Amino acid sequence: MEITSQPVDDFMEVSPKGRLDGYWADHLSAALEEIMRQGHHRIRLNLRDVAYISSMGVRVLVRFYQKLDAMEGAFAISEPSPFVTKTLDMMGLLKTLMSDAPPAKQETAVNPVRRLDSENAKFEAFPLPSSGRMQCRVVGDAGLLANCGFRDNDCRAQLFPESSVAVGLGAFGAGFADCKDRFGEFLAVAGAAACLPSDGSNVPDYVLSQGALVPEMQVLYGLVCEGSFSSLARFDAKPAMGVIGLSELLRTALEIAGADSACVVIVAESAGLVGASLRKPPVNGDKSASFFSHPGIRNWLSFTTERAHTRALAVVAGVASKAPDAILQPLVRPMQGPLWGHFHAAPFSYRPLQRGMIDLTKTVRSLFEGETLLGLMHLIGDDRELSGASESEFVRGACWVSPIADAKGDRG
Image (cartoon, rainbow, N blue to C red; front, side, top):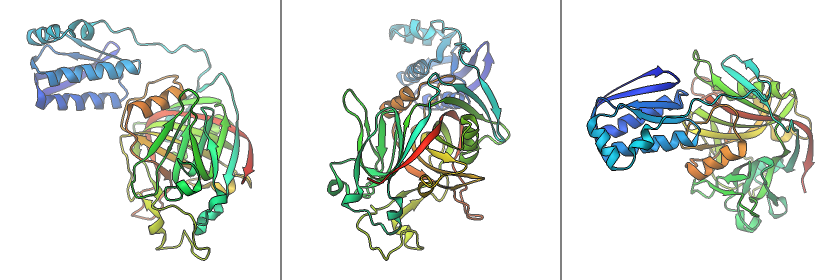
């Protein structure tokens, strides 16, 4: 099968030639996926040169129709061959797939758009109606990680409603005794909380808010931000490089926030994540032992030796600061440039991200409900010469940011 594509009107028109059977259906699906990854969300499939279509081929058409419709894009077929027309008509799909797609939705300029260029990406920043600020709490004592010294009285239950963003170490369960074998990295954003148990299963778990249910986690330590976001920024990496690093993305987010410290949530297509996760829970340790000593740290932490989860859609959350105060300092780490941060990432199976103004809660919830959660990690920078994987990188996405108005300690 030959597959060609070209822009026509406001569509990317794709023209396959040959048989759309079980073998070639996967090839067409991969071609359409790649077109969507390039940012084209209005696709028209010209089927005049498709002599045969099987149920596997029809399945591809229906799947992309549903996928693009869900993200307010458009998918339609045109000029179907006689065999394709007959097949789709008998299946009751011809009218649906050939229906005229609505014109491309024009963004209404309700809020002024601020355009920024960083070294490797272009940004469009939209002020949000709330123009909010975040209150930040440092929960627990992160210093106990050094000798894995967390005990029963260092654990506290935390609720994570839609208005909160949090990262740290925790687990789902009834208390310390129930969770002591599973404490690991967690992330909470927009009414969803996810964690990676350190019990060896390496399978992430999550809880979504529903009705009166609010995600609750037993937390050893963490950063908890509460409030509303002030800005949404859409970004695309410039073609010359094709990616933007996490540090550059966060420095631009701080510029948009107009603050030295900010809470940031990113939903973006990953070009590779660099991070670490706990191999076993840091509890009831030996005060004379050192978690960070070499080579013992290998028993405690699992590192990505190269960028992981490329071409996934990642939810990244945490706190960035150009000048962390005494409250934030214990929980932020140096990043590239004059920047400190603490960020966790939850990669999902790939799905194109709708362009323009999007809602954080709906976006995050749709990922947890409709895609596969692939893991959870604490993002780090790997600066080893020659063998280092550098830092996490992204292609395009959305970034919600809000200044941190106040940071408080809460060791409970």
